[in-house]
Length: 453
Image (cartoon, rainbow, N blue to C red; front, side):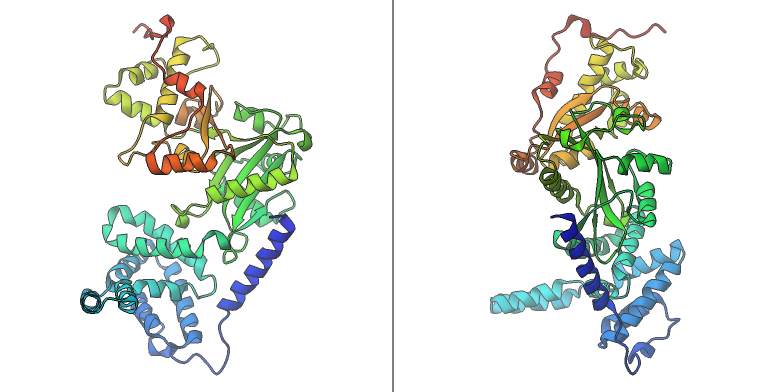
C-alpha cells in the first residue's frame, strides 16, 4: 500500500473510531444514577451489563476504566479476579440450551447454545471498549492480568476472553502501516526509543542514524483506536550484501549506500510495543507488507533477510551443561569466545555446532523451536540461512548468545511452504551450511581440549 494511501486510510479510520465512541449529548445520562459513583468497581460493571442507554453506558464505562487505572496493584488484581469469577456462563442455561438442541436440532438451537456458553464478562469488556480510549485501557488491563496470571490461575477464563476480543479488534483489516522517519512527531520518536527491544537506542544521535540516512527505513503497524501508539515496528537496513555483524549496520561512521544500489533488505530489529497485546501476532503481516512496499520502491532488491539475536542460547547452554551434556559443558569451560578464535579453531567450531543444534534441533514440550526469535521467523516462513560468528559483541549480545547471531532468509517463493511445513509438521527449512554444522564430526581437530586447572 503506498504510504499516502496508508495515511488517508489511517485518518478515515481514526475519524470513524472517534465518532463511534463520542458520547451522545442530550437531556442527560439516564441510568447513570442507578449505581452510585463510589460503588465498588465490580458492582458498576454489573450495572454496565444491564444498562440499556448507549449514552449512559459510555459514561459508566469511562468512569469504571478511569477508577480502575487509579487503583493500586492489589485493587486492580481484585477487580480482575471478580470480573473472571462473577460473570462466568450459567451452567444451567447451557444445559437447557443443549437439551433444547438435542430435542430439536437446527441452526437456531445451535445459536442459542453459543449464546448461553458465552461468558457475560465478554459483553462487559465490549461495553468497556466503547468508552473514549477504551481499547487502550483494555490493552493496559490485559498487561496487568498477564502479570498476575502465573500466580492466580482463576484469571485464566478472563485471559481467554480478552484474547478472543483483542484478536478481533486488532485483526489485519484495522492495522495501518506507516513509515516512521526523522520527520515523524517527537512523541512518536520518543516511543521508538522507549520500545526498542533488540538493540537499545541510547541517544537521539543513535535514533537519527537509524531513521535519517537514505539507506535506512523504519515501519510500524498502528491501530486507529490507539493513535500514535505503535503496536510493532521493524527497522530495516538497505545493503549491498547480507551482513554478518550488527556493529557494521549500526556504526554511525559507516558510509551511506545509495538505496537504488542496494541488493539486500535487512530486518535487524523487530519490537513489539504493547505488553497487553502479547501473543497477538502482527509480525508476519508486518514483514510481508514491508517486503511488498520495499520491492515496489526499490526494484533492485534481490534478498530479504534478518540479522537476528539468539536470546535463549546462553541460557540453554547452561541448562544443558547442568543436565550433564558434555558438549555444552566443554563449551562453557572454554570461557567467552573472542576474535582470536580463528575459523579452524576447534573451540569456535564446537560453539557454532551447538548454536546450530539449538536453533534447529532443540525443541520444547510442544515440539516447537526453543528460541523465541527462531519460532517467530521460522513460523513466518523464513529459512534459517547462516550462523554469524561474534556478530554482536555488546554486553547484552555476549550474555545472551555468546556473540552469535543468525540470518533468516525470506524467500517469497517458498515462504508459504516453509510456514506450512513448520506449522503442521514442525519441519524447519535450513540452508546446507546450517545442516553441515549439525553433521557428524569429521575433523580430527574438533575434539576440545580443556584448559589446565
